[in-house]
Image 1 (cartoon, helix red, strand yellow):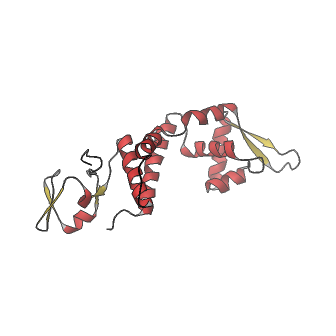
Image 2 (spheres, rainbow, N blue to C red; image 1 turned 120 degrees about the horizontal axis):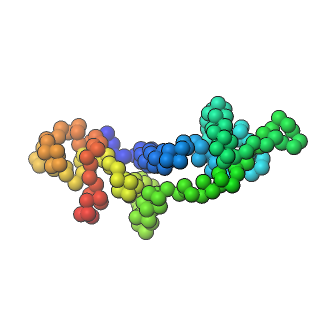
Image 3 (cartoon, rainbow, N blue to C red; image 1 turned 90 degrees about the vertical axis):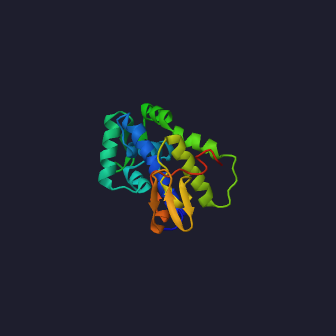
Amino acid sequence: MQELTTLKLIERISTLLRAEQRKKYSALGLQPVHVQTLDYLASCNRFSDTPAAVTDYLGLTKGTVSQTLQVLVRKGLIEKKQDNVDKRIVHLKILKPGSELLKSITPFDVFIKAEEAIANKQFDSISAALYEALVALQSVNGSSSFGQCKNCITFSEENDHYYCLLMQQPLEQADIEKICREYISVTNSGLV
C-alpha cells in the first residue's frame, strides 16, 4: 500500500465531517440531507428554488428529495408555493425557523478548531496540507488516526525486523504498509 493519496485524504476528511454532521443533526431530529437542502435553499436564487434544482444540486433521486422536502415542510422549516405564472412549477422557500436553525448549526466546531491549528503553516503540496488538516480534525474530534504502521511513533525497526512497541508484537513487511487504528502520529505525540 502506498502513502495516503490526496483522494484518500479527502475521503477520510469527508468521513470525519459526515460523522460530525450525523452526530450534530441527529440531536436536532434531522439528517444531513435535511440541512444540506436548507443550506441550498438559503443560497439559491428564485430561478433555482425548485425540487428539480435541489435534486440536481445535491445529486440525489427525486424520491429522496421529495421525502426530504416533506419532512422540512412538516417541521415548518420551508414552504412550497406554486409559481404565479406556470402552475406546474413549485418554488421552495426557507422560512425563518429554517434560517435560524441553519445559522445555529454551521460551521462545525471541530472544523474551526482544526483550521485554527493549521492556519499559519506552510505546505509543500496539497497532500501535505490535507494530511495536516486530517490530523488536526482527528485530534480535535478525539478520533483514531488510522495511519500507516511505518509512520507511527511506536514503530520500531532494527536489522530489517519490525516491531510495534504499543502492541508489543512483531510486524511483517506487509504490516508496515497497512493502516492501523492504534496509529500515533509523530506530530500528535508532542515530539515534533
